Length: 445
Image (tube, helix red, strand yellow):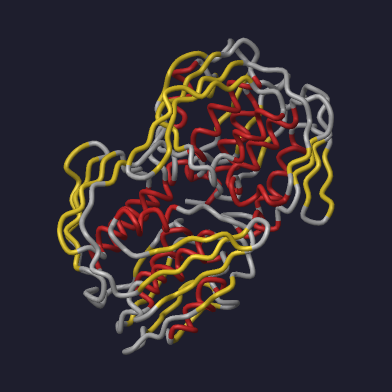
């Protein structure tokens, strides 16, 4: 069977206003980390609200290969019996992460400073993604890269050191994955491991380190950065984890409600961590009618319900320093920008070029397919914005779940339908996206 025959295309059409209350899947970043911290803890970690998409299930499988007992006890409910920091078992087979870049890079950190050998691999999409950014700091601990694909790509085999040394690492890129890999590696190194970032990135790893009893200190660094100091070789204490709704997944029904006239949609239990709410901040600046309800704290994370109504949007200038707090949401923000009055400039999007696809190029191609005027200047994307979008085109998703969902959302408000060439990869992060959106009134066929 050819690749084209295995694709699952879908067409999105403009219809009635969207309405209803939904809960989107658990946050992918928290879900990956909850399983990994369960692995690194002696005792039982209970997790509720776990995202049961393919990416996270691959991380669960890898945790089993490293010695943990990982069991599903109900919908979104899991228990992990861990082996503790320093107790990982050497895997007998390659660790297959499928499409999960987060799972792969973070697990390189988890395993890195253990004196074991492991081979990391993934699907065709993950094999195209750069891994040197995670490997370079790990080598400073004494980790040895035994084998790697061309340009530092998967499959990669690493050998952990017998005696790791702590490091001080100043990250050259604003990447929560790289920072987290270093901190997770530092757990099995003696002394203090330090990460310095010039732009603050999502801090789920730091919060979860504290939640499980590690000694971690976070202090400001420069105008927008932070310094994180971690005391190595702690005995992590088992703690329950409640996974909030993923703001990156909530982004799709939120933008859909904002651009479809007359809509009234509530998304419940959304994570409101300040380092993850860049899209909400930007949409409100654009004039989106978003009401924050029932704000609360669970497992160390801020969450709230968000009510969104159809809105008249205006173009804005999105500063580069906001990029780390919304890097996964730029594709769907570009969709919102297409329906705004006036140009929207999104600055500093270099990181989009090394996601599941070259997302910057894929977003531009999707906008072109929809007849939306736009330009790319360096690492900036400018969407012209005249309050409407013609639509009528077919979008190539390049095996990227967020590109697929973004342009399905776009088709709900374009004059002509939008077709995406493949929706299979949506299951990696949002398995019931199509069903939930249809429940709100979306016309997908």
